[in-house]
Length: 209
Ligand SMILES: C[S@@+](CC[C@H](N)C(=O)[O-])C[C@H]1O[C@@H](n2cnc3c(N)ncnc32)[C@H](O)[C@@H]1O
Image (cartoon, rainbow, N blue to C red; front, side):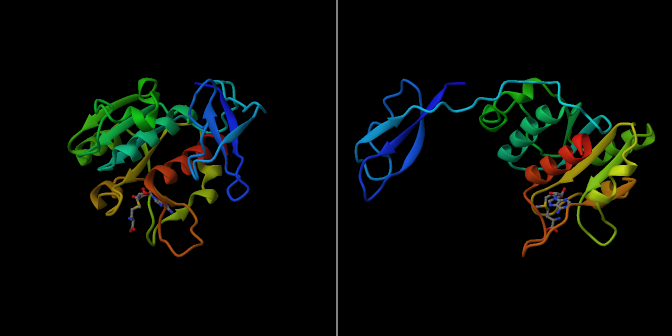
């Protein structure tokens, strides 16, 4: 990843501070007002791959039931890589990493996470349930319990976390095969989070909480 440095607009009416890659001519003019800029050479920190953070929860897999947006699926792959998720099941019309635009949001993380495609998600869920998989669906609704109160029940056996479509949520027949429905607390005016954000919160709780 290119190192970055900060440039500062010299116009008193603007004073925009913004990062640009080192050795780039970008930023010599302010992108906001086109005024001249100067360099602040304090170095930005960079994150290197670590792989040694302590995992407190069980192995985790994720099942995406008809998640339609490439950006959301790409973001799920990036988070799955970070959380050490073992496998991503792509159900229904969920786009796969074969799509050329996926790498824009996954930033290559799809190469490090196993995945499989299942055009009929319900049939794959039935197969997983018949094989004894622990299926936890992340969804709202009256039977949902807060994920935060489930951490002590995580155990050590793998969990498959099921998430659903951006508007309709998880197929009710799929929910019927899941041993529990867990929800993330919501305190605002909206009933749900973006699906990739919800996955990130839940995955990090389950793996490292
Ligand atoms: C935007 S939500 C779907 C809409 C939702 N079913 C509704 O009634 O508005 C997309 C997916 O994100 C997950 N999700 C988002 N916010 C959540 C929350 N607070 N608790 C549990 N799951 C959530 C679920 O898997 C859900 O299927």
